[in-house]
Length: 146
Ligand SMILES: [Zn+2]
Image (cartoon, rainbow, N blue to C red; front, side, top):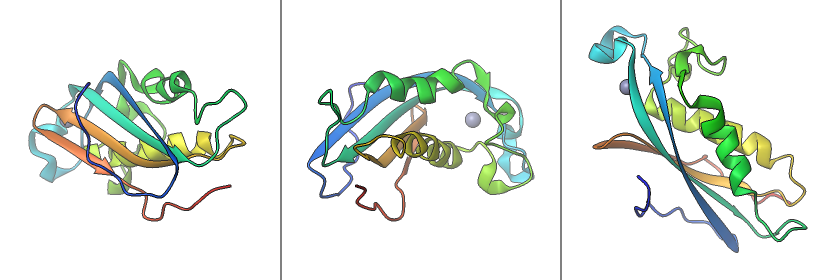
């Protein structure tokens, strides 16, 4: 949720940046145990990205806030998540559950960060799917990059 405090992630980087964003999207979870979630329905997803690093770029940024928003909201807003090729209905690890959405967002963001010369790391992705439920994804090993 915008302007709320998020769970803290421990790391020893000097800089930590957090970016809030939101997008509206539909999804369904193609599994018998998903109950009502097997039907197409929508959420307003609230996302918080935590990016950390020791080195700033030439402009004095760890990462450009606007580009982070473009990578995530720009891609998913007003779409059916199941239509994106990063999700599929064969493998539970690729179903668009809140957990998987959080991990996929991490992967998209880190893929972009890896192209930057100052090599920042995405250390946490917070995904709120409803007013009462959210997931936090943290990569297993936050490797020092650069
Ligand atoms: Zn849902």
